[in-house]
Length: 166
Image (cartoon, rainbow, N blue to C red; front, side):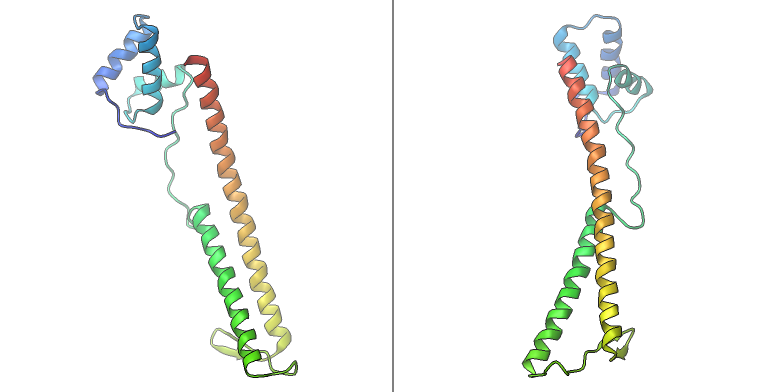
């Protein structure tokens, strides 16, 4: 739900709410009030109470982003790590082929500035990096699905309330 700046001042909105509870609004004025309450950024206890009584949940306060950032940023980070690993493997294979090396060639990697020449250790490092990237991607997918499920629930509630009153 997109919040918009109210076309009415806080005082005018409070007067319209009072008229609503006094049953002096026309059907059209009541529909307009419901629409305005659902989209206004005005904050006042009476406005929040009217929203609640009309079936509108107050929008949740925006929470500060956690240290990991949003799911989209996490997914982008995972994708960039996976791309870097893929480029590293591709470049290594290209260099090996371009030098005409055979299967007996030496496999090596640099880890923390040290050259590792043990082929089994290099493969273990590569497998570990790929596994970590996959786990991060799975966690980002789960976080994103949970966020979308929460939004879908709010949309369903809003739509069902909208059909009852509009």
